[in-house]
Length: 223
Ligand SMILES: Nc1nc2c(ncn2[C@@H]2O[C@H](COP(=O)(O)OP(=O)(O)OP(=O)(O)O)[C@@H](O)[C@H]2O)c(=O)[nH]1
Ligand SMILES: [Mg+2]
Image 1: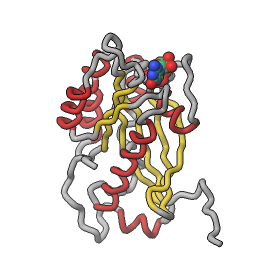
Image 2 (image 1 turned 45 degrees about the vertical axis):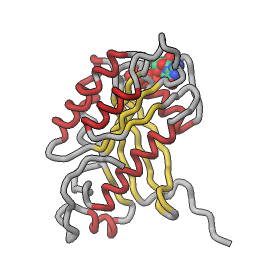
Image 3 (image 1 turned 180 degrees about the vertical axis):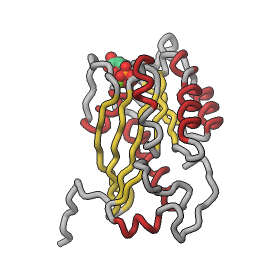
Image 4 (image 1 turned 90 degrees about the vertical axis):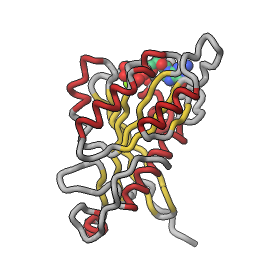
């Protein structure tokens, strides 16, 4: 009989940031993914909240996902910005029923890219509230969202925190992109950076920038 693995044991830890305007549903997506719950009435995030989830990306390799759930409101922007540098991945979230939140995605993206350069953050673009699907409710088409996703080199997923549709797919797609980028050397563990941590310092050395393994050229996430 094989011994069950402690579900909180992990080999790698990824820090992922939630980005997007206020009320697009960042906290709701996290609540659905980590607790399988949805609240019609949920507090606006003040500053930054913190969520944890474990995901086995391949047999025996468990990732601890640390999510920074940022406030979309402008008045918290200086707090939010301080989390960009130590994130390896980001979910760029807009509300399919809000044209303005879609138009602001480019600003969120540019702000992060400028702040973390010369390093990269891997993104997934998420159109949330896909349950609001009538013509009057929906203000962003799949085609134009896919166009934007292609421009920023990110996969696109439509999701609903309310029904749960597409939610795990969005988080797991990003996690797998990061894992593959780490394995290929496209993203490297760096001293003094908390985006990726390895529980075993020995295998961490193999991935550390400046180690023996040559880095592959920087490439955008397209998995
Ligand atoms: N219909 C529908 N409503 C949703 C969905 N996701 C979130 N909401 C609602 O949208 C509102 C805002 O959700 P939040 O999760 O607080 O949004 P947020 O992006 O975290 O907002 P800030 O914390 O202010 O940045 C709440 O009333 C949610 O119930 C969804 O998929 N469908
Ligand atoms: Mg929130």
